[in-house]
Amino acid sequence: MAGSVPAPSAFSERYPPDSPGFQAMASLLVPAPYSLPEQYDGWQLSWKFLVFRPAILRVQACLVLALLVYVSLSLYGRAINVRKADDFYSALLPLLSRQFSKPTTGLISDGPSDFFYLWSAYDLRYEPFDALTFDITLDSDAAAATPDFIWAVVRKSELALIRDQRWDLTFTRTADHAGLDSTLAVMSEFADVTETLAKLAPSSSSTPLFTLISSALPYLRVFSITDQPEERPSASALSNKLKRVILTFNLPDDVDNISPLLEGTFALVDLLAAGKVNFRPETRAKIKKVRDGVEKAVREDEEKDKREEVLEDRRAAKRKAEEARMAKLSPAEQKKALERERKRALKKSQGKLVRKV
Image (tube, rainbow, N blue to C red):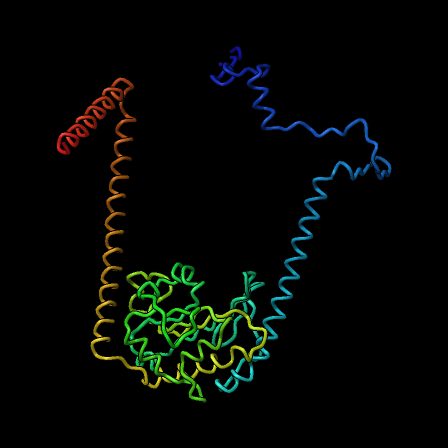
């Protein structure tokens, strides 16, 4: 039986090997080999059949140089961060040793800019200033003795940024207070909360809390007490609320500039744990009403999102089934079906227009 010649494919008929279109596609798939310039007047190294011409590799040399500069700056920045963290921790260790029975022996590094120790964390970053944060979480007994509330003192220049970063502080209203420096603002849910805290003197020297907070200027950024998360929680996380005292400030030149407020913060935590901070019954009732409303809104939003997901899944399944049905039709039947769908959509839009008029 004589061998048969295979029929040419549609592609080969449209793009024969010698056609410009085929050659253009082939050049994209297989780039042309690199050819050395015939004229080269620069410096070169040669050994037998090997030739090294540095002038040809200018772009690669610049990329390597940029990489070396980047790595050098990264290592230098990390070394500076480690030194700052170690110096501040060493200066702070005597204060922490008085507050805790088992102080840690050193810092734990989490990347080039974050350093943690046992009770809280402070964060060194390349921002306008190095930011340090003490985040103290009350245990279950202390949390049970502490009423629900959100309260903060914020440097006014930080207000917009703090409101964007902290969902919990959106519960509050901002106001000035005579007991604070004019560059600071109070963020509080109710006036009774602010007035109760203004009367506290948590330090060993009986210095009022507001005086301690003002003494931390110009380093203070935000001092807050909260029973809500910093980010909007899911409905399942509403029952896992933590009560925290958070202090964020810029790295001071001397730890003594911030030590009074740090000591006062630890003393305030002791007062909260001992149940020494209480509000009027009507204030507690208002706070509870706000919490109930927020929890209800979070659950309703989550249920709404779930319903929308179910509806979208149904629409997607319906579209997929319709596409499968259309694929089985002949071209003429598909054209008729599309025309019917167009007329149906046009009629529906005209009906909406009549109702609006």
